[in-house]
Structures are given as structure tokens and as C-alpha cells.
Length: 379
Image 1 (cartoon, rainbow, N blue to C red):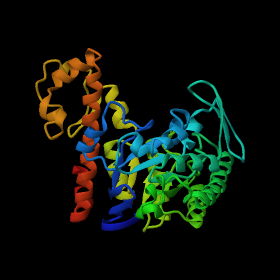
Image 2: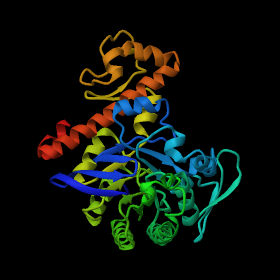
Image 3: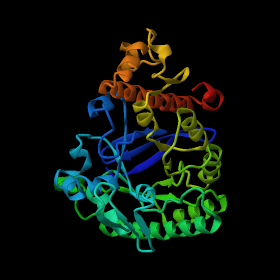
């Protein structure tokens, strides 16, 4: 089955929906853990399944460099390669190339850049990026965009937005011309499902200027995609500016298509974004924070490094039913972290992911029951 999306319930602007992909269904709103190089750091795939992860994010830039698109393709695509038989979304690499500010050169044709691994020279264009994403074989792939830095003045933001619009058209044209050329994957070994294809999402840019975001949204919707993302956020701007841009942009995107805000946020923020009508989010925060001892709980953020937890026999979060909170004390988790044990990263990451995923489950249930607007502060 190819891609589809429909809204099942709404409460205010918040929506509970369902995406259908070739590798299964995804209930929205959904938080996607980031598995940049085909792994969510410190957590094996069976544990991700136990946690109820529905969809993962991989990154084209990183997999292109190592182990290479061709190698992943020969091994059966990203799902088979990483032993994950559920949906995957691949970012185009636009954000990663953006982050290589000292190692890249942007032109109309694309971006010349040097690998952060060994300094070797490479080139990404909309066509090259989509060629790689088709080769990797994820269920949802992203158009190649230019992520506008912060701060950026009006001229720079407008030029970047217009570049992204032109690249979106090139991405769509290449995808339509090549989407049925093998893999998918590899044409499902030519079974009945051989008509399956990936879904290409467009990305709205425009910096921190609502008028450019509006123009970008209009131009991207005019091109036509089965889903739309808001990119260029969490690049150093104040949190209230991020909120403002999402709030201004979401109403401009089609109501019958999934809306994806890229690279956000804290547990409190993702609930707020759902209230605006956002369906999909991803962020490295739960895994990255876990590796630094910062844990999210129903009682607020907790820094497990603090000496105050050395004799604390309480569970990490008394209201959490994850395997970490069911078994281990704060004192033990602090000991693992202070001892620089790898298990500290594993257990911390499992808990943070569980907290994010449980938050999304409660939000979805609240929307379906019609009480999201009144209960949002307690979710």
C-alpha cells in the first residue's frame, strides 16, 4: 500500500490522524525519534518496538557518506539494513549541509561540500539528494531545501526562500520521473505490491519573516506534495520566535495533508505545537539530553548528575511505567552516570524516549475524547 493520510478526530486546531505507508500505519500526532545513521543512539530496535515507536528518522547526508547509499541499497534498503520493519522518514540532508558553514558553497545548482569525516569533496543538488533518498528506500522522503541561518536579514531570507521554492520544484520533478525505477524495494521483489512508492514531502522556509513563510507555503502547496514540513527552525532563534513562525505557517498548509515541524522540541513544546495543528515532530533532544544526564519527568526536568540523588531510592519518575522507572532508583542511575558506565546512557535514553512517546499517546487520546483543549496543561 502506498501513502495516505486522513484526520480521525479534532479538538480545536489539534488533530488525531492516521498515515498509511508501505511499512505500516502511523497514528498522529507522532513524535519521531532520530536515528541519524540508522540507529537511535544507545537503544536497540527491539527496545524501540517495546516503547511503541511507530516511525524513525534517518538522515540522507550521513548515510550517503557512511556506509553509502549503494551499500544500503545492496543490503535491501534502510529497513532491512537496520532490521526495522516499520516506517522510516529520511531528511534530505539540507540541514546537515547547512550546518557545515565552513565546508560548503551554495549555488543555484546545489551545494558543494566537504565531508566532516575525511574532508572529501561532494555535491548535493535536489536531483542528487532525491536519487540518494530513493536509493535508501525510506517510506517518506524530504525535498532538498536550503535551511536559512539565524540571524538572517530580509534579503538573505527572501533569496533563501526563493531558492528552496525552485529546489522544491526540481525535487518533485526528479521524484516523479524516477520514483518507479527500482528500488522500491526492489519493487517489493516484483510482488503484488510492486506499485508501491515513497511519499515526497515539501518544506516551507523563509527565515523568521512571516511574509516569506506565507509565500513559501503558497509556492510549495502549489507544486503539490502529499505532506508538508516547516523547516529552518531551532537554528538559534528565541523559542517565542519559533512559536510565532509555526503559529503563522500552519494555517497556510492543507488540512487534509500531514503537517510536520522539523527539529522541535521539549515535551511541553510538542504539546503546544499539537494544539496548533501539527501532526509530526522530531528532535534529538530526548536522546542527546539523556547522554548528558538530563531527564524529563512528570515532576519536571531532573539532572541525574546532582549529588542530591546519591541516596535517593525513589524511581526516576513515580508516574512513569517504563522499564527504567519500574526497576531502578535515582541513586543507581546517578551512580551509573558518575561512573561513566555505558548503561547510564542506555537507561537514560530509554526513559526519555518513553516520556516523549507517552506524552504523544496521552495527547492523541485527549484529542479523540474531545478534552484536549481543557486538559492540555495537565498532559
